[in-house]
Length: 116
Image (tube, rainbow, N blue to C red):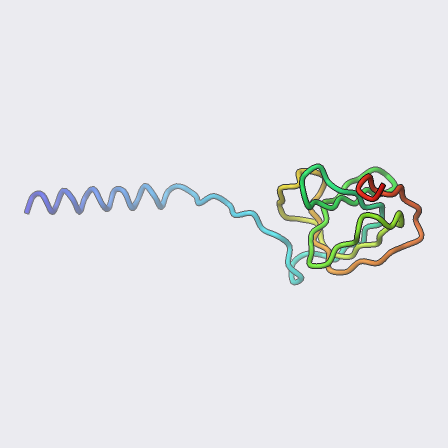
């Protein structure tokens, strides 16, 4: 009886200790209901990590683009992307940007090294 009482006390103490530590925050990506829509414009280029697409604006800000359909890197034209900033990725370049839609624009950009 004493053994089961000690075990119960130990279990309750462990449960109390676990409750007192906050859980780590999970990385979140924006969803359409909470993130405000944003439009960015610039030139796309390959990232330093494989399969990363980076958009650089005329003022030098960089965005790591993510989405189902992303612009190709060999057009030499600018891109206008609509979506929301936020989230985490493995590209490690600029602000993560979740692309909802994009289109070519008339900005002249250098062709990527991939196409040369």
